[in-house]
Length: 100
Image (tube, one colour):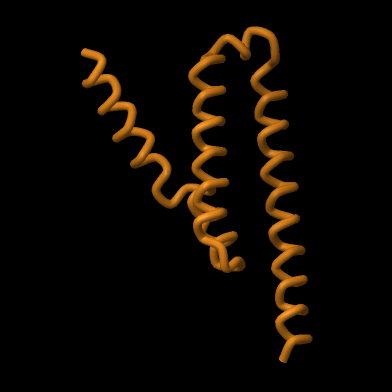
């Protein structure tokens, strides 16, 4: 029974993560650095930590915070990360042009 739960959770999360924002962010960061192992370790440890938080808190946090507040936090965080990636991409382009 534990093995079937483990396997079904793995398959569900694996399929859900394909093409998701996490994978796209990892792809983008890896493409702009020369250290794919560091990107892999950072990305995978962040995913493990986020999954741990999700598994431990479950639905109980929604009894303390309204859903709209949780969604606002998530959307603001993604917006900030997106803006930082966008700005950093221009900074990297400028550095490459200066080297050439």
